[in-house]
Length: 252
Image 1: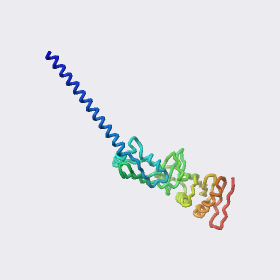
Image 2: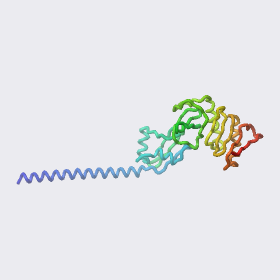
Image 3: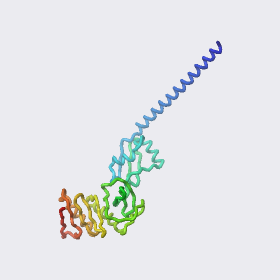
Image 4: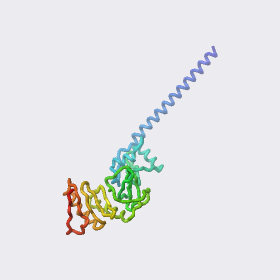
C-alpha cells in the first residue's frame, strides 16, 4: 500500500508540474500578445510630412517607405534607420527620415537630377545633365521627356551615353529647364542626324531647328499652344529669332 501511495503522490506531482509549465507558457504568450498590440498601437504612424518630391506623389513615397508588416511602426522604422536601411525608389537618390514622435515622421526626399531618357530593350534609361546614366526602369515618367534620334554605342550605369556629339546633353538640359520655366510639358524631344530639334506636345510638334534662340522660341510656344488645343500639325519656329518674326502652323 505504501508503494502504491507513493506512486500516486509522484504522479500528482508530475501533473502539477506540467500544469505549472502550461500556465507559465500561457502567461508568457499573453504578455507577448499584450506587448505586440501595445507596440502596434502606441507606435503606429498616423501623420507623415513629405518634402522635396516632384517625380512621385506623397502617397507613392509613403508606399515605398512604409512597407512590410511593421512598415507603419515608428519603433521599427527607428531601428531600420539605425541599421542603415536604404529605400530603393525610382528617380530618388536618397531619403532622410526624422521620427518626430511615436505617431509622426518627416520624410525629406532628395531626387536624382534627371535631364531626359531614352528607350532601350523595353526599359527607360534616365540620364543627368551630363548624359550620365543614373536610372533604369520600366516606368516612363511624365516629368522627364523621352529623347529619340540619338545614336549611342552602349549603355552602362553611371557612365555617360556614348554619342558622337556630347554637346547634345547640355542642349537637352537647357531645353528641360526652359520648358519648366514656361510650364511646357513635351512628351518627346527628337533630334535628327543634323541635331535639329523637334519637340512634341501631344498632337502638336514644334520644329525648333538648331539650339539657338531656344528661350525666345519656347517663350512664344507657351502662348501659342493653348490656341492649338485639339489640333494636329507642325508649329514651325526653327527660324524664329525675335519678336518681329512670324510663326507658322501647318495642319496635318
